[in-house]
Structures are given as C-alpha cells and as structure tokens.
Image (tube, rainbow, N blue to C red; front, side, top):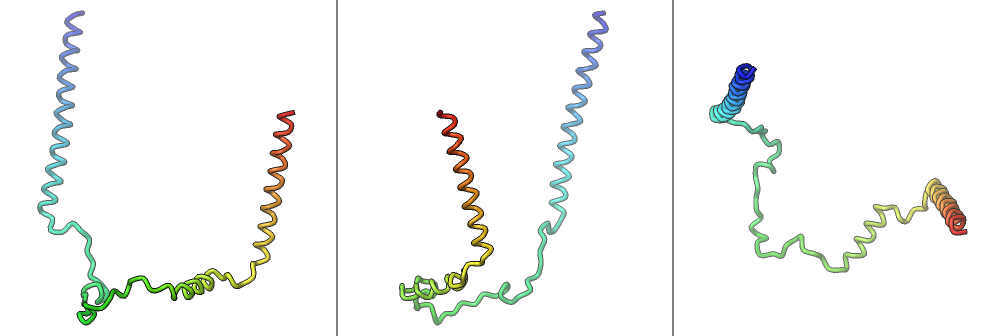
Length: 127
C-alpha cells in the first residue's frame, strides 16, 4: 500500500513539473514572438495622408505679432448682442407650444395627486 502511495506522489510531482515547464515555455515563446514581430515590422501605426492643405501647412501672420490677441474678452457693450443671440437661438420670443402647456398641466396634476395620497397615508399612519 505504501509503495502505491509513494508511486502516485512521484507521478503527481513529475506531472506538476511538466505542467509548470509547459506554462513557462508557452509564455517565453509568446514573448519572443511578440518582440521578433515588432522588430521586423517597419510600421505598426495606421497612417493616412491629409486631404486639406491646412493639415499640412501652418502659416503665421507676422504683421499681427505686436497687435492684441483677437480672442481676448470684448467689452461689456457686446453683452446685449450675446443676449439677443441667445434669445434668438432658444426661440424665447415665440409663444409656447400648446402641447407643452398641456404636458405641464398634466405633470402638475399628477404631482398634486401624489402629494394628496402621501398626506392621506401620513394622516392614517399617525392616527
């Protein structure tokens, strides 16, 4: 009986060594393959030619070197223009659509119903 147990232990130890050796060799070969592939490939990145001249050329206007920055904040006199622009973009001068008013009223009614139900529940729980 003891000899069988000793034999099984030896077999299991040798199997474990083989499994570890296979894992080590697999990782090593994968690493070698990766580095050899990277060393012999000339270009791994995708590249495309630019379609517009702006992407390949950049010209600086030297005449404006001493001028102030065109992107600086403008005086507050332009604030009215900005407000007009926002008013126009958001259509604030136009009347509210009737469907929006109906939806708002429906939401208000549902909120009222919910609050009334909550009040009744609280009153019933405290009485």
